Image (cartoon, rainbow, N blue to C red; front, top):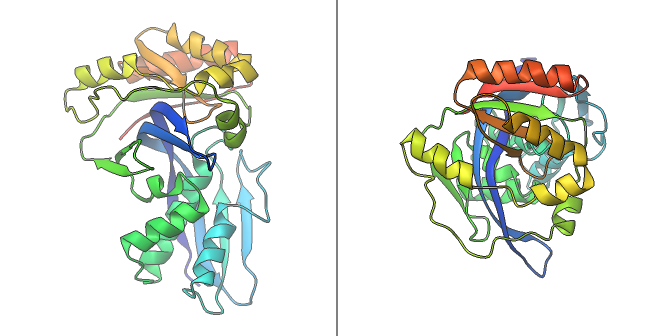
Length: 287
């Protein structure tokens, strides 16, 4: 049977502000999110039988729960709503995005699979329901339904899609530390008290960079407290030539550096590999 190949892109939190914690223990956050050309590869095909065959491969396949993950949750929720009848799938996921890094690999996998099933199997799921199913899988999953620069507002997770392109030169460094999102958010004590004026919508790259340089990730302090190595990486990236700023993405542990040009980002990558030979590095351009 025909095999389909899907690219599942990673997300980058350029900024992340935590405003307050609700009684439900969920947090009210605001984040400017972009995507870059780092992606997992998912292959899907129909198979006979009643059981799905799901396989993870690649550099970052380890420590993923094989019985309960975002892929199994997508299949379960679609079957629960009777979108599939007696149909099993063979799904292979090549994990190129580090697991537990704050790069949203699992959420992206779920969103990519939802979009695939909806379009290729003609499920006719409207946007509202698609977002509802995505949210049931995970908080970040709806963000990944569209590969656009995105503002996650501090209004109960409302998502605003931005049409302007950022095209930032980015270096990603993953120190092989799996961060628990739940643990980091629960232990976080740093909150943004008031909403500042944003330049998310500017098409002037200089203004955008100047704005981003003044921003932060509120979770960085607690991540560095638990994992001091992350702080050393951030500082090292920041000191490299032509680096505008460096911080963690999401709840960590991946660190990002935004550079004025790709050549400097590549040079920084070489220096980091020399100083931290066991760390994984990647250079790309954001959308």
